[in-house]
Length: 136
Picture 1 (cartoon, rainbow, N blue to C red):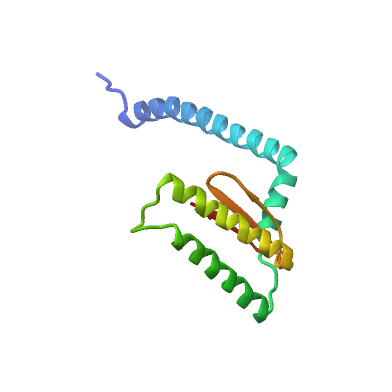
Picture 2 (cartoon, helix red, strand yellow; picture 1 turned 120 degrees about the vertical axis):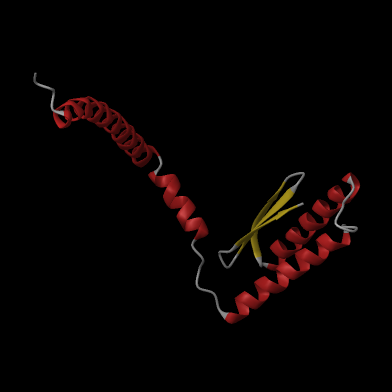
């Protein structure tokens, strides 16, 4: 009596699994390709803008010192409205108002080119190309 050869049985079962694995791999690769094409067709300009935003400019030692002094002052302004690491709602409003006022002062001095603020943060865009986001 002849018995089936075990390697041939396992190879026929393995080929069914291999075919299924190939289909899944093809679907995954196709999805990645479609997403990559969509990203590059629609998102390239956005990606370049973000890259330019986060690329640090070449700064002189004086510009770096001025930037660090400004950040120290922002921290000091914030510390004025912090008590033991906690802030009341009124403290938050006052801290944001103080940072907005400071940003306006820096803009008048030509240190900050622009700033935006909301109820919880102030975004400083410096003339030297650096940015800073103060979040309460």
